[in-house]
Length: 282
Picture (cartoon, rainbow, N blue to C red):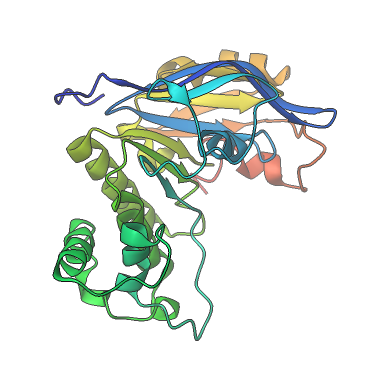
């Protein structure tokens, strides 16, 4: 965790939180505290409720029970002190939005009406573009940019309101390894510069393993929280899944094998790809 001033401030708390839909429970009795400067990786199989956790923090989903508070108050929808980076998705061909337009939406896209050009607005957008190294394609159409280039812009957009907490919903999905490292480094740099708390949902922890303070692993309606060395072990994951699971460490990377497909909402093959490190050493 960053040691800069204010880094230890408590930002987000979930107390005995439970989430589910109908008769289906995703997770329950979740206690979580996120501090400034802390990066927590959120891991688990598809359908375990990782992205749903972020939606709870964004005020888009209501807990079944328990509480979720941000800076001491109940979470609410539209809180600009919480930034959000979505999954990488390529923009459609022909979309007239330029790189700087996407970033500008983070500056004043929450306001009603058409934004008027101003020197202050332009300088803020330029500053954000510079912070993620995206000046070179500021005027390029989004549809012409690679996935990694678009993710740079989404990071800048998420930082536009100077958030205290940053939510990352599988921002590395579909990116090649160089761009995974690039996006991971940009998030980590923003975390350290701005003392952000970060919840980082991912299928593969390896691109961010050297940046993670703690891991929240959700499986089989339950969870474990701790450092990567405490959570990503054969014993802990076998206990979570109620089945034999093996964790292999090789050259500073983590491979998890033998994870059962417990969730009826999974698609075939999800379990093999949905845990930390399953995609490495291939």
